Length: 249
Ligand code: FPP
Image (tube, rainbow, N blue to C red; front, top):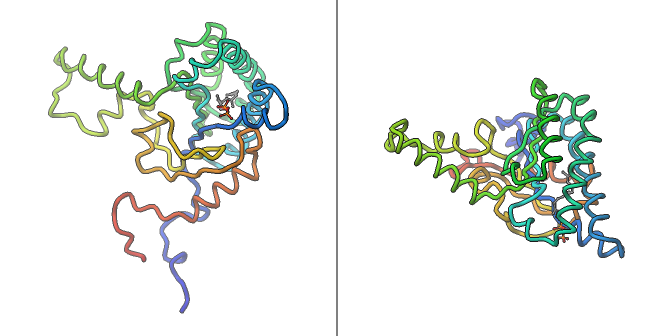
C-alpha cells in the first residue's frame, strides 16, 4: 500500500522550526578530553555560536535562542566567570559586523543588569545597531533562569493587580506570557541540548511546553552545521500533536 501521509501533510516543505533554542553544554568535557583548559573549551564554543548563528540565519530560522549563561553559572569559580564575561564581550565586539551583515536582530533575556558594565555596554550597542533588522532574531539568555523569570512575572502581575491596573479574573496564559522576558517572542519549536544530558536545566520552562526536544552526545564545541542539519532532520520527522490526536494516522 502506498503511504500518502507526506503528500496529505499540511506541514510546509522542509518543516523548519520557527524558533530553535539551544542548551550549549559540554565545553568543559571537550577541553578536558583534549588536555586543555576549560576556557579553551568555551572559546571553541564561541566559534560554534558564530557558525550555528549564521547557518540558522541562512536557512531562514525565525529565532535562535542560546543559553549562554544561567543564574546557576554564577556559582562557578570566579576566574571562570570572569573569563566567560571577557569572552562574551569579545564575541559581541567581533560578531557585530556578522550580525548586521546577516540582517539579524539581536536581543537578550535574563537579568543582564547583573553582568559587568563593559558587557552591558556591548549588549546595548549591538541591540541598538540591529533594532531595525528584519531577519532572524538572535536571543542570548544571560544570567537567565526560568523559575526566576516566572517568579518575576508573577511579582509584576501582582503589582499591577494591587495598583488596580489588572483584574485577576482577566489573567490568561497569553496575558501571563506578556510578563515574561520572552514577551512577544514565539515559543521554541525545537530545543537542542548538546553533550548528552536529558534535562532542561531551568531553561524556558514555560515556553518549551510543546517544544520537540533533541539531545545529542556531541559536545557544543563540535556542534557545527552538520550537527545542526541532523537536528533539523530529526525535527522534520517528528509529528507534533500539541496534546491532540493526529487524525492522519
Ligand atoms: C556549558 O559548558 C556552557 C556554558 C557554561 C555556557 C555557554 C558558553 C559558551 C558557548 C561560550 C561563549 C558564549 C557566547 C555567546 C560567546 P560546560 O562548561 O558546562 O561544560 P561541561 O558540562 O562539560 O563542564
